[in-house]
Image 1: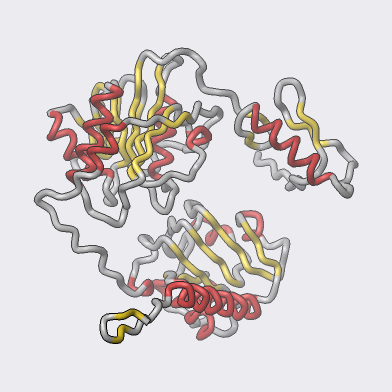
Image 2 (image 1 turned 60 degrees about the vertical axis):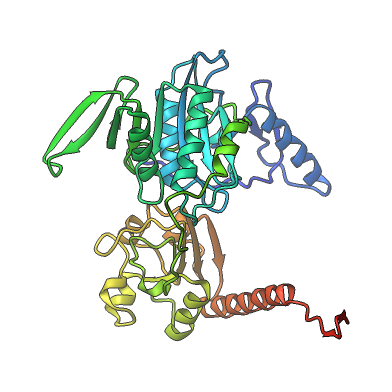
Length: 398
């Protein structure tokens, strides 16, 4: 039986117990000047570790580390994607009390690594996920391994750098490796073989390339989250030349991207009355277009745009639902989306319970406001980046 809990206003006054638990005072209201007290209580709560559902999460281990599990992941705009978070959680779940979980991030990291389960974090911000530098990444990983001597290395088996790097390092180090791992424990790994007609297990190899969806990234504990500087890793990251020449990324129209592969989706429901304005907003955002079943059945969009149990399942980082009430079938199609934003007149619609952010208002008015905001942001950026023209007369700059 599922229990639905009503949301609690996070600004309600609360106290911190000796165990670090947050206790809300029932019936109390926020008074003038309470914001400062609330911030102080929040700071006290942070001293006890990350919170989840109002309860403080304990540290996974406080014992001295005798062994290391190394997780390698690429960051995107300072954040780890869901697959990378799952891989980091997998390492934390199989680590014992005397094993530390180290995270090597190829790129900048703004996420709270402790909440994600990392004890040590090595950030190599000189890497960019949009740049192809396999030899530099390989050298950085080799330098990190030489310094930490990890017992095992875990990498997300994806098509955006992790899978390629894991296979390259396995060949470079002549290490044992398991790919497309869907089952993992402290002693073995499991993968589907023979076109998924059979399942095979083997002892935990040197390198584990974890398949997406194998682990729940939500952990009941936190890591230490300590930053670690390894000069040899940073030095290895600068060797990005070699036999490869990066030709850059070819930009394509977001409308041509398959919904299953899109990272940013704007989706329309029956509440969208001006399809032209909606499509214009999608173009301004550079987002792929999706739709609810009702919008498709009404002829507003083609069937290939339908999202839901009877349509397509998406895993976008950002999903904005305009005028979609949120039927069970539609919610099933967006269950793996990271950030869901709902625009709806009905504050009690099912989509509101799923959304991370909800705008209660008219859909068309919100679309118009967003278009104005995009135009303003672009004009401001253009004004800042406009080059200064310098006239040169007879060798003297004027």
